[in-house]
Length: 288
Image (tube, rainbow, N blue to C red; front, side, top):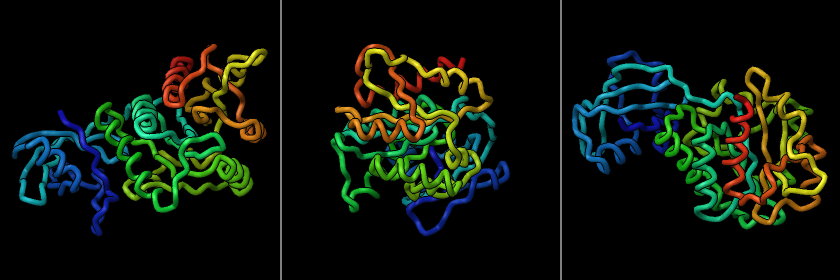
């Protein structure tokens, strides 16, 4: 059965209601993106059934009720409380890479249950977005994450956070810890969702901070604190992953000063789009 993200925040002037505020049997106006994908691209017919999720928890089985040229409505049939979120909450601070490699990293991280991805630029990074490019790229990468959720069954999309230089990001961490607050800048499609209580852990200091590092002689493969943190009820881990050329010496030192312990996974050098997948899979394996 096809799954679709029902965004209460959207590119129209009329916000859509949260699905949880509607009774079963209610008629729901579908968002433009769902109408386009389900009714036009997939050529759905009245009576066809699908799944909607809005990111606030759970999912809803619906049946197409009416289709017109520009609009469509569906009837809410049942609600399922299935969450499928990972037991380890994770934020990956990922230096941006070009083209399909970045899409791949976001897509696969989503499938592995990442909670948020902080986009970064760095001294050795390939991508430095101009201010005029940020909104478009942020929307694109958020849609990549949402599409991965629709495919894999995750009902809470990861937040893709607007890009910062790694220097500014580390400074913001230091400042927010003193003020006990952080600002999350996201695409408008998830702006309301980012205020939900589920994502509030992202406002707090992580239980563990790790920077994926190039294998080095004499460096422990795994920080001792990792197994301790993963024994918590709902651990929150931040991961810093550098670009293809690696972080600079200054960036590594700054990150370590902010508590990001070096973590090398195995004895090989991972590509920047592979590292998030391996790191998340390893965390979940160690958790269980």
